[in-house]
Length: 615
Ligand code: F6R
Image (cartoon, rainbow, N blue to C red):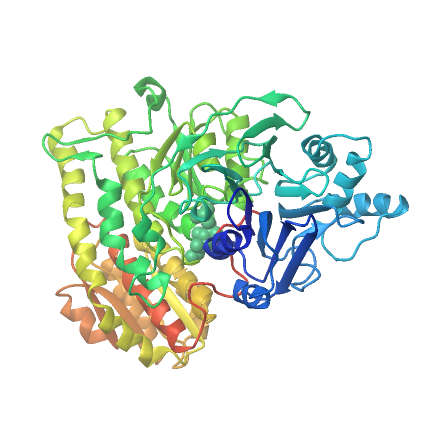
């Protein structure tokens, strides 16, 4: 959570910081703040509760000339959103300023100790102990980076932070400890940047270096030096990252969420591109360079993720079991990490994440690494922490996803998992005849165009949403491989429209949820053709028998279902393995249009953040 940006160079700092924060606002947006070093040597801090626009308008026309500064958008953990609690925070003498992402888990004891030593605190935050700790460690004349190293070695928890001090006015110091989110250093011409995430840097530079756990960067306009928290010097090279400027902009779309839903045909095509050979059939995954021998040792797979990524993992479990023929389980990463899982050298842990920075998913990966399990991650952000922990990576090639609700990265992740399952089957010799592999791979070729057909029917989904936007409860039902899509449909509706919605396996309905069904509780039933079609049809009958209203997601030509349901959305028929991708899309549109109709902030729903780097 929280967006972090820092700048030191030869251009006015404030517009660069504000623009960077705007690009990071998806990480947190309950308050925002800036601190800059004015040309006259004074420290200027401005912060305000609310969105970045509030800060930007309070700054307009009255900001001193400055070439060094830091900025922050906050997602509150300790202390409610308020001007005082917003970052940056400073020491007793307003000489050290800090922006921070993470939680100082032992802040109460540190704060008490600092108070006993005479320090004064203004906010309710855990972060405020950091400038005071640094102030304490600067007293012996240490450099800022050494004082930062000493301060963070006293702090428990995971952190990303950027600091500057009036005593060393040409320098920013950035640090990363654990998995509280990334820190990226951007290299410009006579200027340098620091940010929590790439989008803030890409308009300025594509030459970047990611800080690893326990690394500190001392950043000046013309050079960067790296050290570890114990003060030893590190040698670190920068890398050049790709950037597609088109995806950074919203274009003609009213919201990023709508744009990103519409981008799915391309995102899926890009995820498949170059990895599939149709004749003779073969799959190649460029970042999975794991020897066949090692892949053949796998006896069990565990898929982990959070939120939407967990739902993608739930679909992936079907692929790994049925295509790769590996016994597979799926777990919420935040539960997995604490349930003392038993893993071994023959376990494959497949982690899912758009950001590659979700704290619980990273902790689950750390646990898997400790126990020697093989790891493959499916991830959208190049160079993120998950991609550095895993033995292999299957990137979803979606470009930036700005809307807080994941859409294109969800369907691309399912596509990537399908590729991975086919790849594992191929490498482990599970599909020994060409015809079998061809039958798995060939359906992929049609997916971008089938997805395109589904995304083009926006008006139909909008009409349906307008019919239902006043309801306050929804039940989403499905079976088998479509069950995770019921969960995902309900999650999308909850997060963007704040309507209560539940996703259930349809077979479970009779065991409780059926008591809820009446004319006030519409039921969205995913009932595309496949193995369990008859079963879900009888669940729909049960809903209708209780005066429930049914919106059915059906396969084209399913007239029987059209007669039973009150409203039907027809989907083109793809291979039954890939139908979840198609079924997810109308539900994304449905949630989007309901939220718009209810006047919700679709791209930045309340209380949410794009990347969850705190527990
Ligand atoms: C929902 C959503 C979240 C994320 C979850 C995990 O639309 O976006 O549920 O899926 O926070 O984030 P990643 O995928 O970055 O690990």
